Length: 135
Image 1 (cartoon, rainbow, N blue to C red):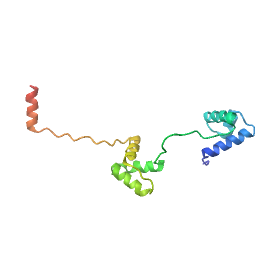
Image 2: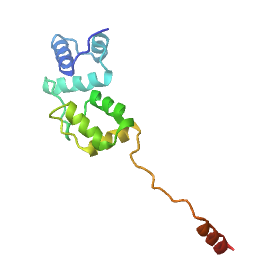
Image 3: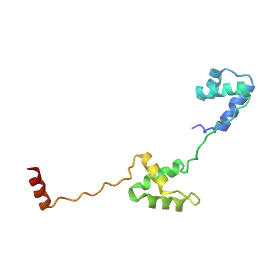
Image 4: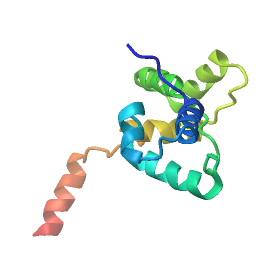
């Protein structure tokens, strides 16, 4: 199984090939097997600035890694969001996860955290009143 290359290493490979004279995107694709769309974007960036910089990403970083999310999904059947958050905080010190994040991630997995309200059964007197009202 081939080793996964980080995005930083990918940029360096494309940049070194570009500096060695390989300027055609299709040739870069054949050599590196990187997506064409990415190579087109990087080649235009290399033409303009002669350097590859990472795009700016705004927003808050993800709190839960995929491994922690899987653990969250496994523990769903046994506990409520407060208990799940507590176990994750105990397992991974320094995580400091809130119950809201637990509920949001469970929602993404398809678990719905709402509990239906209990509806009481009608008593015999209430049934008689309904029938008399409907007549």
